[in-house]
Length: 195
Image (cartoon, rainbow, N blue to C red):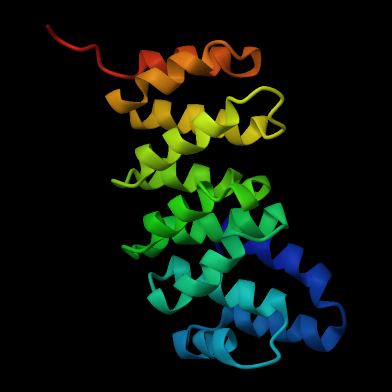
């Protein structure tokens, strides 16, 4: 069992509760049958912990049946669930992932939950990544914005991507003390223009 799966099963074991559910968790963690895992995602009445475990395992295996469940978990109010979903989505290889992450990252109604979609966009390095991170960061540069962790993740992600299009918004981020140091590092990663 890899470290990510071990950490996930330990967290979910606390949710599963009684011995019967704990045994079921162990079976889901150990099964090699993707159809058994996929059935958990579609069968009615499944507990959230079981759906999360099944989606995570299918995502790591590159089984696209996990996509919808992982996107829902990426937008969950519980940060550990978001982190688990982002990890699995980054390995899933589904072409819809970047578009979904961009939609979540730029949704102002869900900005409190945008941290993991933002980080996922940086990891994916997809065509949608830079525009979505620029949009999200620009909104976070408003006075008294409470989502500094999201803003910092955008700055760091834009630095990772090193795209010229981010130069203007990163220069604007220099005026924000909580972001300035990261913005300097991010700007240093953007290749200098010739001319």
